Amino acid sequence: MYLRKKIPPIPLQYEFSIQVSPEIASNPDLLKLQVSRKNSIPIEEIRYVQILKRSIDARQRTVKINLKVKVYVKEDYVKEHIHLPNYPDVSNAREVAIIGAGPAGLFAALKCVELGYKPIVIERGKDVRSRRRDLKAINRDHIVHEDSNYCFGEGGAGTYSDGKLYTRSKKRGDVNRILRLLVGFGATDQILVEAHPHIGTNKLPAIIAAIREKIIEHGGEIHFETRVVDFKITDNEIKGVVTDQQDVIDVNKVILATGHSARDIFELLYHKKIEIEAKPFALGVRVEHSQQLIDQIQYKCDVRSPYLPPSPYSIVKQVKGRGMYSFCMCPGGVIAPCATSPGEVVTNGWSPSKRDQPTSNSGIVVELRLEDFKEFSKHGPLAGMYFQKSIEQRSWKLAGETQKVPAQRLVDLTKGKVSGDLPETSYKPGLSSINMSEVFPEFIYNTLKEGFKAFDRSMRGYLTNEAVAHAPESRTSSPVRIPRDRKTLEHIQIKGLYPCGEGAGYAGGIISAAIDGEKCAEACILSMS
Image (cartoon, rainbow, N blue to C red):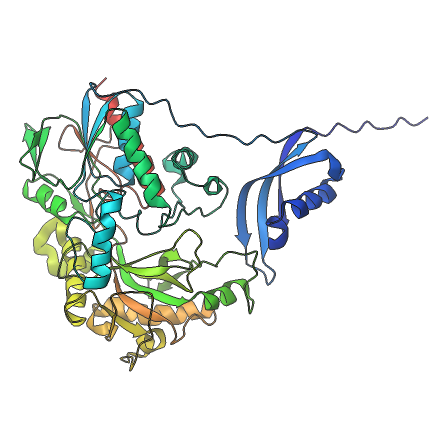
């Protein structure tokens, strides 16, 4: 007599990974059918298939979508509502000054409120709405407002340069917590699902404004158009900050979250003999292709499937022992002028939320080393900053002392040939046909020349004269690091000063800066308790 083996009951909810076509991934009914077939579950018993994570696998000729899903069997799906923390009123609480209202500064301020302390945020730029006028002035009139531009102002550089949320810094903190907070403040919950989440320049300002309103609603302060011009320090301990509004804010805890372009703050620290150190970074050009060409290369197709997003790319090469790589790639995006002072030219890129522009662009940058800054060694730890500045100022002069940029068709660049003509690109202020050998030192120029040939060997069709290089892409990261104690996160010399985020050399994007902001706020408050 044979005993029939008991089949364990199917759980009401369970998770698993599945690889499907782009069409199936975008159609809930087709996805449910695929799950039913793969797991031998009657389709009428599947109430809902929730996508938890989604990524694209374009390594083979046929593009696939990798999904992690949660299947609800005989049980209804109830969408989770993400709640913000229960922020208390901190109007009369102990105060912490936060310099900078980028992601590090804003998330540090939120964490202060959450823990019952009052943040006083000092931001040199304008609020998100007021910034727009100054961005238009750069594009249309070539006027650079020193305190209000693509880098300075509420939300920092990320607000008007894309809102990319991908980070490799998973070990630094809870990435999902930051993403959930952003959803709580109005971001789409798809950022919790996508492998490379992105909000978009058209969506991010409203989220930043909501964060600001929450901070103020619960008793925090935000002072726009206010520059910090000095620190009050006694016996190597912070006692307050001095602003250009003739105000002195007396606090003994300061979180320094100025971003990677706050050169005046780096100069202030140096002249006050507050320890800072030079840091390697990367510098190069921003290259624009048609999005159709990048789709054809990456998806191996003539026409991109309507079920696939515009394709990104990521590429790294070694050229005679020096790294060259893509940075901040923007599918379906545009190139923007990102100078922070008159007399310089800087490029960056961004995409709207739908990534629906006809062009794509990416920074293509060359690894720099401390020994590359020898010419500027008289500036001590600011040598890299002055190296960076010299290329931006040279580019401005070469392009006619406007916000036009030096530009060169890509094949022409590899041949050392000035482009006889240039196509119109997404960079609104305009282009000047310049040989990149006039913009960059020889070692950067030669690395770019050889590197683009190597890129083409990996991405056939990438090296085309329809693509245009715009110079320079120079603000990839901070050229200085402000050293801090590993455990307390306090400056190694000045008690009560907490260097934070990208500008201090401890982050590399919106998410990692936000995580660092929270960590600095927690460390700061722990020292006050």
